[in-house]
Length: 357
Image (cartoon, rainbow, N blue to C red; front, side, top):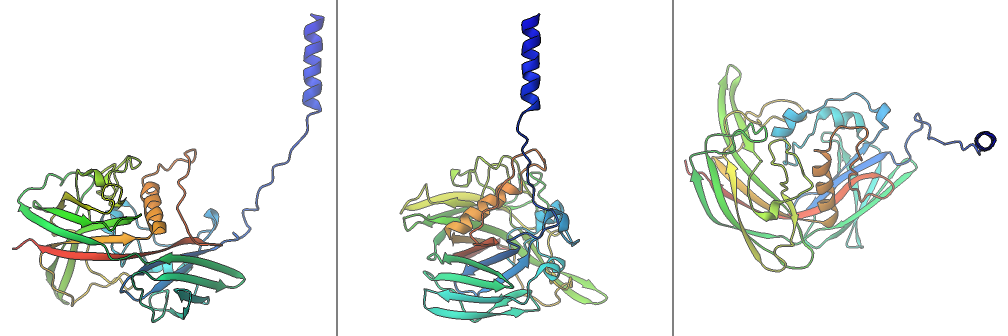
């Protein structure tokens, strides 16, 4: 009994004399050191622009318009409408920064702020092979990012067939569809080396509506496509999102085609009557005049820079991650030094195939 008592007393003495360590936490009211987000894509042949916005601590985010899962189904891949709202840019845009871009380490451009589109613009149009650096000064913070514009990829439409049935109409919350699909066989010609791609397949059309205020032209589109080809398999994407199947990604590398050609088949559901319409994202107004688009499928292969590839992959993983405080967080890839966001580049090869109505 004495031995047990002595052991207990020794343990109590060790506990009582243990060193105390104070854990230090950042003051949640303190502003983040890197409080700028840069978002820019250098697209070959398209005027260059940069979006620069404030980022906030979780408990300091200002109230703003939010697009939920319903909007994510209809607002997916178009650079003009992806999850954008006038409210977000109005409340977070940084309008007084100094932005200079350097192309191929020699030509410099000074960017100016465009109040109508909440972005910085200049007269530079990216070209294939350009090395582009962005240097930003806003207050006391300096931000830097750089990327290389890829060479234009090549995709061919080998064949297509209109099929009067749609086996995907009830899959993955797909909303903008009809009872018809287009099945396409495509072929990618890879140039070798390390190449990264994103494939956009959009079924689109215009429709009309006559109201007391005049005739309106509606733009209808469906971005989700389907394929069983191993090219699109990503085993990390374990659940569906906005109509996209689980384990499916339209962002991939050239593992299966190093310096060769690669053929695959895909299905694109025809855009129906009830889907996204062509309103101005900043004014909220419908467009009265617009391009008349027949029922067709756009096939666009994008060659994307390595950092854009990593960013898109991380975003696809993030958007299906569970809303669980105990789950390991998904880190969004960023190549912006002393800030957040992404600066990537792409070039593309685009084709259209009509349904033939």
